[in-house]
Length: 76
Figure 1 (cartoon, rainbow, N blue to C red):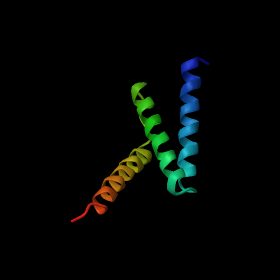
Figure 2 (cartoon, rainbow, N blue to C red):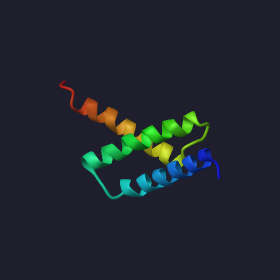
Figure 3 (cartoon, rainbow, N blue to C red):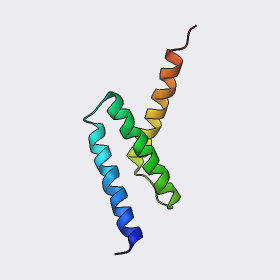
Figure 4 (cartoon, rainbow, N blue to C red):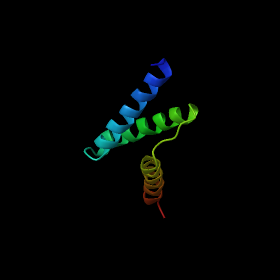
């Protein structure tokens, strides 16, 4: 097994672990996991690989929620 293949397996295992953990945490822990998932998605992209579709959608949803929260806190 090559070093690249081992790294890919580690990335995929970590992504799977984050996917499970996101359903079990909230608040700051949730935000930290989303940030890590985003970093891993960027790493996969740099390697020419893709994040599973349901996780790409999750990241999009999280980004949309963050933007909406910013507008919710703006004075009128």
